Length: 325
Ligand code: F6P
Image (tube, rainbow, N blue to C red; front, side, top):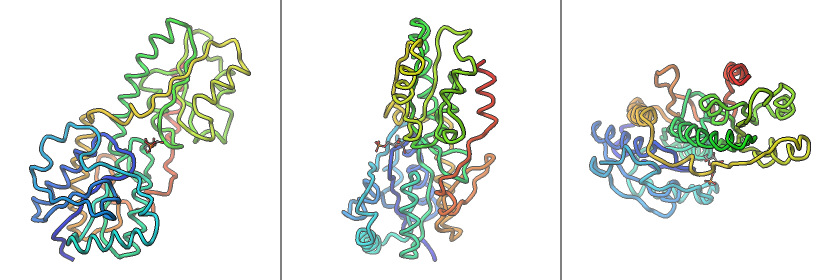
């Protein structure tokens, strides 16, 4: 099928680099002779008909901006068959032949259901700071968030070492430990407590019994937000009860991790992936997420990308352990 008009939307949690991706999708589509429409507020825009025509100048001066000019939302209506029916009718009425959806796990899950229900062409771009999509080495926004974490932890280190304290620093990741593990390596922290390891061992016990803090006057531990580990607060509560000799503090980095101008890596990644999304549509690909593996663009079927089983690299755990002794 020849695609004449492409719709682009951002959905779920915003991530630095989403604007660079919107720009790349728009410009690559126009370069390829297609029309482009920007859909506001994620899937909400399809249900409430918030759609604007895009030209190359609609995406000028946005490559360096964090957040998303299209706005984003987590849309409950789109999780219902009735909501998706309305969205489909909007697409038909607007003459939009294909969609590029930029978002994380939940957004691509919605895309997969919709594409199957209406036999509609959708290509996804992995836009999330969590890096939790399978089949891609990295996601748009992850590198910037990692750098934000590193800078914050560098600052916390000053106060931790001055007061000789143990800090549990909670980072985002939605039950995934990529930000915590790589953030810990990048900032020279003592350990990362991540949900992926929670069922294997008691990570706090491990940390204490491996002699942490023996030769140090302060300690920084990155904890991935998680119900299974209890996050940084959960860890601190346990330390207060079980190891009261430590002067413990908690710092939850929160949404600061999602903001800011994207790093060069994220801008380049988003630009490559955005252009690749249009190539994929031209090649009649559908229901795939654009991924990057060993610096090469790949197409990952939605079903695979959202399986929630992207593995943690064990050698990184080992590096962190060796370097924190
Ligand atoms: O998926 C991105 C993310 O920032 C997660 O790391 C976090 O758990 C979640 O979104 C927070 O979502 P919200 O901003 O809707 O509270």
